[in-house]
Image 1 (cartoon, rainbow, N blue to C red):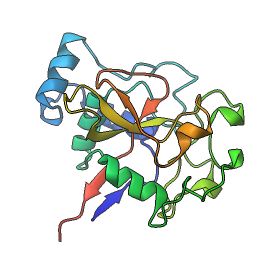
Image 2 (cartoon, rainbow, N blue to C red; image 1 turned 135 degrees about the vertical axis):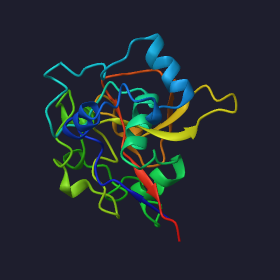
Image 3 (cartoon, helix red, strand yellow; image 1 turned 90 degrees about the vertical axis):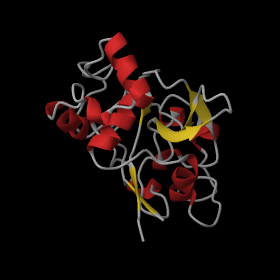
Image 4 (cartoon, rainbow, N blue to C red; image 1 turned 120 degrees about the vertical axis):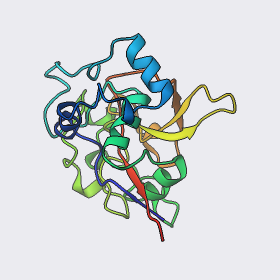
Length: 196
């Protein structure tokens, strides 16, 4: 059993992590994440000062896996596993998209929408998953805590971003990225294990 955030982490939420010293407090960072942060002098997300990507209620982007992991630790949460993410997105009936089996560009932010950028995380209430989660199709790729490969070189991404088409927004679609990458279509949401 687990809880998962209803929305991807927003710029305003991520700002709280930064104000709390999240980039300078090593206790939130894994050993690998700390090495990467120090070596590259990372002090904020890649596009933090770019007005196109930083409205308060938009998902934070330009986030590496290590930054997402540090935020989750700071928040007392974790990144969801790939299985947890997919369960939250498609429910128990194996639906193709969070809202059902037919694609609808009015229910998510993909390339079909023509918006060409991220949107407010609450923009698509008709596109929520069976568990009430927003943006599980479109808007951003989301980091998970699962490895894509046996060599542990890539982390699994889920969700499909604003700049990809409907096939990548299917609940079962998988993608991958190196944990250090910080693209303008890459963010995350958090989860929490329920202890019984």
